[in-house]
Length: 400
Ligand code: NAI
Image 1 (tube, rainbow, N blue to C red):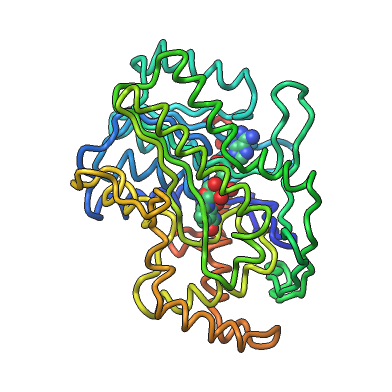
Image 2 (cartoon, rainbow, N blue to C red):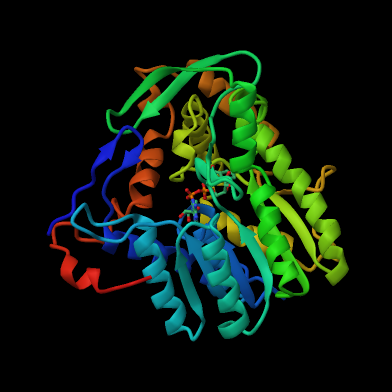
């Protein structure tokens, strides 16, 4: 069959398996030619490994100098009579194929990372087939819901403000339009639920479980990802529900860091750059900022995608030759340094002030934004011939 892109609003309803393969290959190619990770980890567990920063972490750690064996946990859908399946499903398959070609272990668990069942499966695998321990745990889950481990009831995150409502333009990729959107103020209950979903509680509970089972190697590190951004985005992100959840995540890193001290381990949050991922396109009123940021950073030659960010994180921060991991006053790793550079931000701010529904495609980097979005789902790669039919029967035989 010929697979066409189907986009509804900011959600992709189809994915191109061959394009997903290309995305994985391109990222592998990038890290193989980038400054290598020195003294990196060898046995890594990645929670949220199938797309965005988690997938880029996995590729960087396997192919960017560390030659790590990896376990990836993700929530994805394979092909069925309902559709071709999600991009992350194919990313898992093609990552594993490439890693195995290099003699590396690449085990995929496709299931709910919040469930006791998935945790037990991962633990059994580490104990029985992965050598008994891990030396890095990457926490890169991005989701809108988390079940309460005690009651099974769902907490749902809300992307809302804390304090005043905000209205701002947001992209509709399906319509190629900038639409005004009102972001409401969160209730206490919505704020609490967002912290439950996107804060550090689940990260903490994974580390507790692994630590209690004795599978964290001496010197084991753990890292989770966050965003801070510039002041223009504070009302919707940093000071909103997401920012509050991230503040909880940052505090969790400090607690875990103390805890892991007992085995010579360390816990960090790395603050990353704003990028187009399956999760970030949902953040209302954020797109004019990203369109302007991409335009300015590309002009300056400082633009990075997930893979460039993750290779820099592991090669130049987490496993650098510094005696200690470089962090800021709040003990955060800052690989959003180029995004927040003063001159970049002043140009971004000026560009945003002139951007409207009629000119955003000319002023901002909408082409780049849309291409990134399409490529997340395997479309828009010049190396792929999209007119060649995809053999879905053959693909259905592949498992992650
Ligand atoms: P993404 O949507 O590309 O990836 C999320 C991953 O989590 C996927 O592998 C997905 O399968 C997995 N996942 C979701 N729910 C799951 C569940 N219940 N069980 C198992 N796996 C599950 O997201 P992205 O953007 O890479 O986000 C990762 C982290 O990076 C998040 O903490 C996010 O806040 C952070 N971040 C993102 C930025 C951005 O601009 N995209 C910027 C800075 C930080």
